[in-house]
Length: 72
Image (tube, rainbow, N blue to C red; front, side):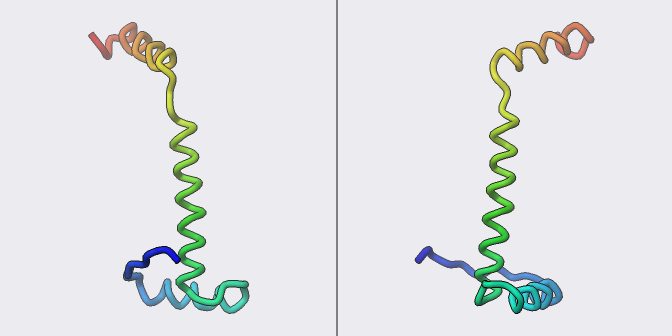
């Protein structure tokens, strides 16, 4: 089992999650929150990886900015 830490959330959000947990396979609000956060973080990290530019792409952008007078 992974280490756990305490995170405070607003009561109204907790209540909304608790209602959702009642109709899911999750047993606790914590399990649901872990799942949702893991999904969101995975998506964000995947999007960040996709946005990595190659050296060639970076050089093209810099050249275009130079031609427009934004870089020396």
